[in-house]
Image (cartoon, rainbow, N blue to C red; front, side, top):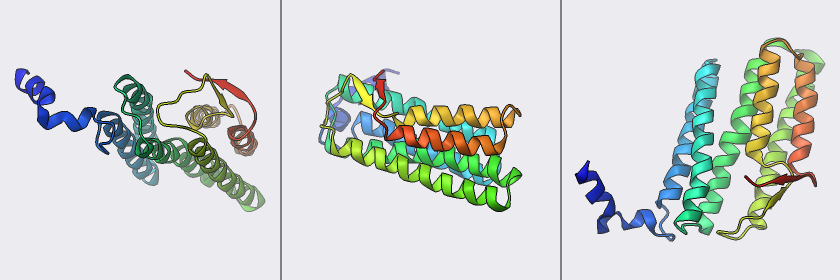
Length: 197
């Protein structure tokens, strides 16, 4: 244990606490988020939704900590902002949408409903991407506003997980999932004010 503490505090590890390093501690947490999102995507393709959800939540946990670490150790930089948005797009837009498409739409919809589900899925992905790009354009490194304008993608993902669970347990039909996905997709770029945690 002392060896690890010495190693982490040595000059060899300075890159972890250097804001200009692409591999600083905050960005390493973001890389874990990206890895968890990729693994979740793999398990969705294998129809192993429980494990996929587990990895998606692991990615979400690392997303919470990367920002806190960046602010605590003054590690925020432009690279980290872009990297975090890429991770958010993967873990909080693509993974939940792909899960719903694979687990809810493909198994229960066909014809016109499947067409509507496909259009809704594309709409949500574009809405999530638009939100993240807009956020990056209007955010400076290290700056944190008190409120988000529009629902942030992590909250959108949580809402989609709740929709997925409601559908899985038979509380709502897949057609209702389409409507809720449209509403959540709209909310990402809305004027709604959401308090920053």
